[in-house]
Length: 229
Image (cartoon, helix red, strand yellow):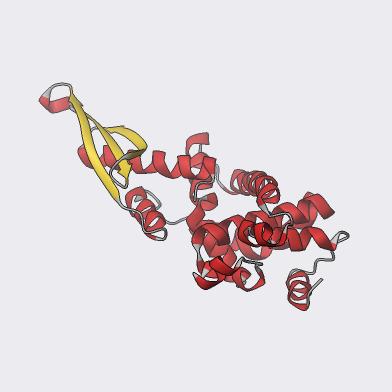
């Protein structure tokens, strides 16, 4: 194992039984393709589930509100924007193994690559040492971030979605697709598109603004559930 990966272990007081798992967690598909080795994609799949469960349990213990609030908070803390924050907090990018093309195109700072690598890191720890050991990372990196957001107003989903797609240089467009009901009790349905053509979410509200916010929340939840780049 390289010196830099030993440094990553030491940062969280980890000691991998299978050192190859940590290397694999840091291996982007571009490097894997060029060097005929395994990428971190399967570990990312496991890490996504670990993070989902851990954040859900943390929120369940901290928030007394109903399931809908918990779902909303969890989506906020496991979306790509949050994952990138987690990765950047300990400079995860410097430990990555990238192909030549990704290296030249500043892959170490790309949101999608960082988000995937963070999940793969958690996945590798879980496979090698079990769930409890992943809390060395969760307690140091994830839960402080979640705790700071517990009391924040997190209803501006349009801004959150805008921040997320801007990191990948995508565009958003909102459209009111229907209006029903009498004038004093209107119901609006909004749809949000990415890059003008991809439907990301829909929402219903008593005002156009409310409908758009709910459409944005729907899109954020979709991104969190599918782990989209």
